Image (cartoon, rainbow, N blue to C red; front, side, top):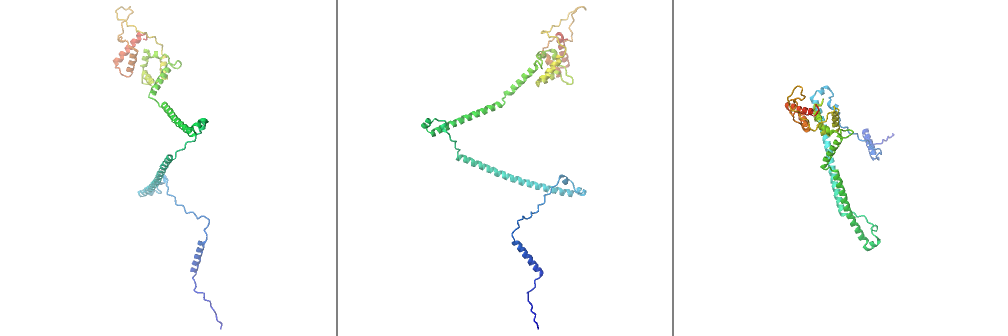
Length: 337
């Protein structure tokens, strides 16, 4: 009888365990392998912070949410959260910058103190002097080079002090010239007044006889009249031009007056009004007109002041009539009537 021999291979291992063992060996082999030269994949970028435009913040996605107070309250809370976070971020940045500034200031103070200490302990060496350029050989032989150098340095120090004094004196003089003195405005006003008078009497562009015209009673009467379309008298307008030292404007007024018909010369002494005498119809002498004034002779200054007071409304109606009668009588007596 034939005998069949069988080989005992041991217990059977499930396929799942065999697969797990193979997978474990594969992972172990990967761990033992050297790392790859390729850089690892970058980490995913963090999501960008929410950023809304003004239109997105002020508009709701649907009409229902637009009409909902709850929705808008949530939106306000969201915006307030963003605002507070921004404030905290800015505050942290400001605190960090302040710390850096304080550290730099402390470092600056430390450097300054170290520099001052170095200057105290390490005096700068003076440049060497070539005494042979300033002393003859026989003199150097008698006094020695050290004494010659000491003499040169003493003279150099004295010259430096003298030069510094001269420089400071020149600086003070320049500053004094550039600083306006209290008398400067007065001199400027005097110069402006001189130029004003010169322009009035300029033979080419001015009126050389403006002083004589200014004394003419006829000119004073013309100044008392009101200028058309201005509501002011010519005297008021002339006064404004004088305040501004506006010579061309005054020259224009003088030339306008000179275009009027020429006036007769004013006698030094006005003729006296003949007394009232009785006579017949053939008598050439006439009685004085009672409305032609009261015989009072006004000076040029009084006429000018009277026209000014009349233009400013400081005369009563009776005073104005009397003043006009006196001026008219004086003009008639002077041959201007």
